[in-house]
Length: 328
Ligand code: NDP
Image (cartoon, rainbow, N blue to C red):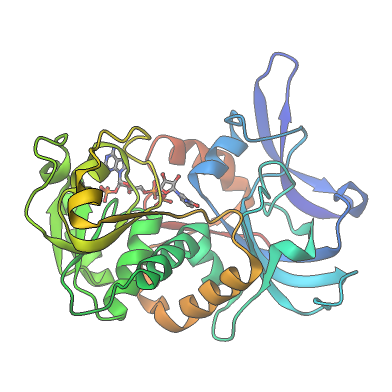
């Protein structure tokens, strides 16, 4: 028997999440069984613990879109009992049973071996948000970003993606301008490596002039909406923006002028269906380029029993830092 957070749906459509004892025969069919050690909390998890947000395929459901742990059994030659593994994406925790469980059973293709130098707890302090930040940095590098070309803008800097992006970029030698709506987070963002803060209001207005002065050598944008539109007109010639999120909205009220007159690139980042080699490379880069001690201060430890409340909190924007769930 093992513990898992199980969400059930009543006939009237309301959902209830509670920790239950399950037996192994409840696990789905797949090649690799993992003893989960840590998971984390993302906005999507808040939806899947609560109302579902159209993501959950069937009930009862075990949420948790990412996890790290040790292989307990494997029908796939790539994994053996005792191997440390990490999982993000592939709609685990949404369409498939997820990581808020002491045991998970998943397809071997979805796993990545944990790189040297990272613990399972480190991996979940990074989580899907941090992996996405790394993928965004790799995309910017592929399009010519290198230190010494000017400031790199990170929007939604106090969030999961923004915080990890700030820490990695600064470690790599970039000057990071961190956009935040929370000036009280100045010390936190500077400790992560931000060189300066940009108040959210400075970029909140919609585009009035399609081109403003060339300011940013690159941008990791977790906000979208009017802010992304505004930033496009402030990019240096030939520079790229990695579009990661929509914390400020999905609508993009922009013009094409920055693409035509400045050769600006808009790069889309999808962490969910990245090929295996790209995920392995991103985790390798995280282990070498992310100073874990900078993340330690932003960790909020949690256990499975706290997740119904934390899930509701994240949907209301009340969670700060990275929630690391000790599942074992
Ligand atoms: P968080 O909720 O942790 O952070 C988002 C941050 O954006 C907040 O901390 C806040 O930063 C800022 N923000 C919030 N609301 C607004 C607003 N209305 N206008 C401007 N800024 C705002 O989320 P994550 O960092 O985990 O994720 C960021 C985005 O990336 C989300 O939209 C998420 O869905 C998406 N995402 C996409 C992935 C992909 O594969 N493409 C994977 C993971 C996440 P501050 O207080 O500093 O201003």
